[in-house]
Length: 226
Image 1 (cartoon, rainbow, N blue to C red):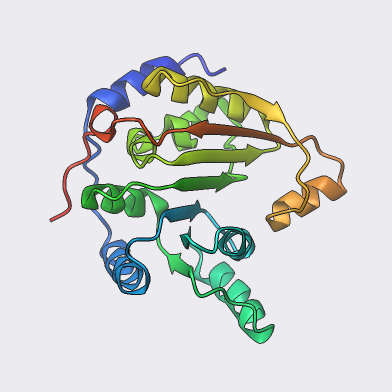
Image 2: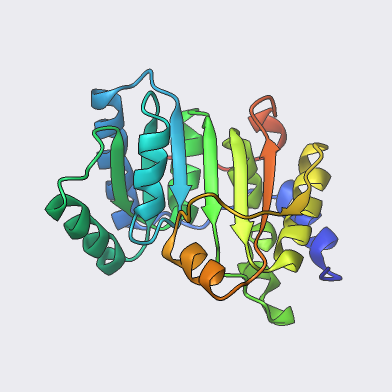
């Protein structure tokens, strides 16, 4: 694991992440959160962060019909491509919303509302494999305590076992909850990346940890959104 990970985790846990919110992220969050409140405000919330074309978000909405699923990606091109394909096929669950936003701001804005997730998926995040890129990995990013504070059952999948080993260490260090990286073979690919990796015979790994009972105040000192 990266030799500076522990020091970075402690620093980020001790300090608030105060980068100003981008205006387009504020607008995207406000609009999507209002849709959630109007559609089914009492439904448990699932976040599919970095959803790409939204294939995984659609599968999650089908698998959890009593939940509300929000898929977030910063690429308007990817989201539009996936939405066109689903609409053309008449295949759009009513409990699904796809949002173009940066998840860093979206997580912080959602945390500021006090909403807790039921489930949270990070499916094949960019591993940023170079040793100088630790701060770009989610567990090395200043927003990581906020990610954990959102709660829910957190699931991350990757074909980079070292990435998940570091993530497990980071989760355990900040939450004192056991997190284990394990190899797995999905019954149905959830994303284009997962389908590609399976076809190429890559080994796949996942981490699942239940953060529903974790105190949000013990993890994040993110300032309230004004």
